[in-house]
Image (cartoon, rainbow, N blue to C red; front, side, top):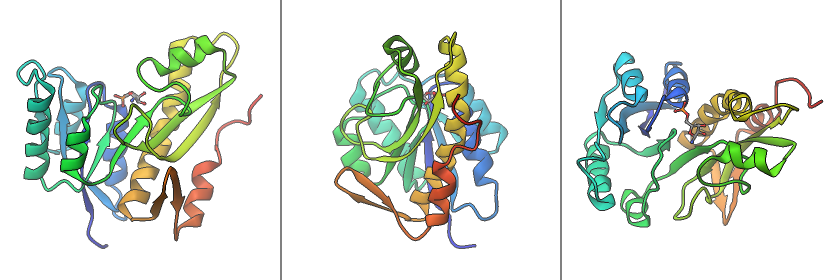
Length: 221
Ligand code: GRF
């Protein structure tokens, strides 16, 4: 197969989305490979998942790199060292500065557990429940200088069911995250997307978009 795009993954926590990217990259025809996993948290299980998969994993300890600028310089150094061409934020609980994004200069993808532009920022699932929405979901978007505000690549919806608490709804959304994040990464790695202002258009692979946008789960009640 043709050359695989070198991806860096930034993760702060348990790393289930990282795991789905690792699993996707194991397929021989997947157009990306994970070159490095970086975490700001020493105890992030994501680091262990990377090591288990024999992927370089580095802690950029936020206790040592306390200032945002120095943390981001350390991230950029590791990213450069590993030839990263594209970044995925997989539960990375820090905002990247405009200076970081400009210096990196390549696509950065983020996964968010809500149907953006609703409920950006922290505790998105709790925000959605407290608002009383009947449908929620998840979004993979390109990162820009705002908070969860960049152009949307793909979304998936799930119902909010009577009696849902944060854990139940989060789990339902997470299943969809695991489906759409590898898909979005595939499209970006294949250069199958074009961005027109806020609108991301999928090019040359319409069969992919059909599969992505149709929820294969149960119909909404
Ligand atoms: C996910 O819900 C993701 O949408 C959000 O942080 C969570 C990370 O989960 N940005 P995991 O670490 O991938 O399991």
